[in-house]
Image (cartoon, rainbow, N blue to C red; front, side, top):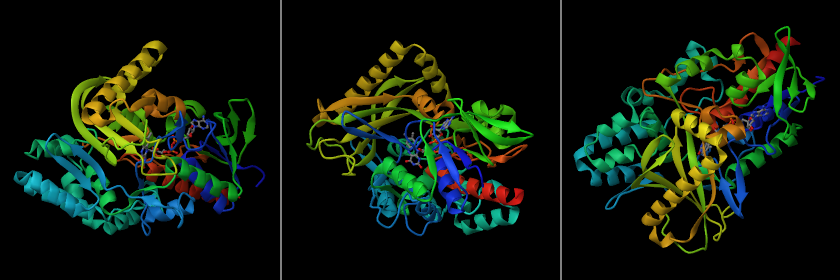
Length: 499
Ligand SMILES: Cc1cc2nc3c(=O)[nH]c(=O)nc-3n(C[C@H](O)[C@H](O)[C@H](O)COP(=O)(O)OP(=O)(O)OC[C@H]3O[C@@H](n4cnc5c(N)ncnc54)[C@H](O)[C@@H]3O)c2cc1C
């Protein structure tokens, strides 16, 4: 082949596409807008501290899982990769009670029953559902959108233990699930991590990833994963061009013939994989008339059916190496209410980064707080961003408000934390082009319709999509990495057919 297949975007989806293309003997080149690879899966340094933007957990960390094989294929992990297993998914600390979604399911069940015996029926139903959900495997051979009826049924049957769980938890929201419990601590625990409007199912499956032991943290964090994937791609002959944003996909007779870069350079190609956010693909690179049908539907039904997932993130460096009472992983606690974006918050989720010695030496530990933001918040931040002084001031106000609440909860830490970075939904949009700053694509509301967008583009047979957005049930690394595999298969099929 004279020209290379062009991959636009060097996040997880783009790198995965590249590795799978090279493995099939199809030469490719990645063009990435930023000076580094990774997209949302990235980390950076501030004042000598590492800020890891992404990986809290890598679904598929357990050997034998379908997704584990994909992570190995793309070089993200191998037999020598060490993992950190956190003790719980998250923990909620009240004045007199602490509850944890322990990785040991029965330990968690026991703890919850001791705290809220009046809710024993709901607690047992919840943990029975988690146990059933431990069989869930991410489809890695074919995307749901491309499966025929029989394949779809077969996939369903392989996870038939999930059927009662789907029936009980996919049509209610997190808030409705919480309302089933009488105990106020239990109610807050259920609402402690995800948005009230998400399907309750997401809490069950997330807990199950932890209890089944497939949600560990790979050593080196997000950057480690990206470095290893990059090394794999280059070793297979792939080409990486950094700080080279694509400006448009040039079409002739309903075929992509080349890509024009922002620099003005035009690169010819036999096929293109748009591995950037679909907002960029159908907002900048191609006319919106080509927008994939299901993606278009998700956009037009967003208000009723889907939620974007973004955040305000505030990161603090811990000065000194003393024990200031922080606990491992994600810990939430009730706090004095404060406003962020369009809503008040009275629960703070604090995450300590200290378990990976390659990133966080004892005197360079980090604490991060994530405050979830949605569509209305994005509009708020976007507007504020156009007034830089006010935008910076607001970030500073939030950083100070959060700090005082952390210090109230962890008095030993008083005077030992300094804010090293603060970012908002606008940051994710500016950095990656993320639609409304959503770094986890769309989450389905509990009433929303499940949609499986295709990775092909109407009327353009040699343009393909790879992205976490090719799902309506929340994006994330599993969606991104498998979308690359599926896109590479489509390209191979197309090239074979067209020759
Ligand atoms: C705070 C946070 C925590 C997270 N935690 C987890 C977690 O614990 N587990 C999990 O599974 N997921 C997590 N995620 C989500 C995960 O990071 C994303 O799902 C995943 O990285 C998305 O990959 P992607 O390749 O689909 O998209 P992106 O990462 O958005 O990659 C798209 C790439 O395209 C590039 N691009 C954009 N425009 C152009 C252009 N014109 N030309 C060329 N390139 C372009 C972008 O710069 C970017 O590099 C988290 C994300 C965040 C932000």
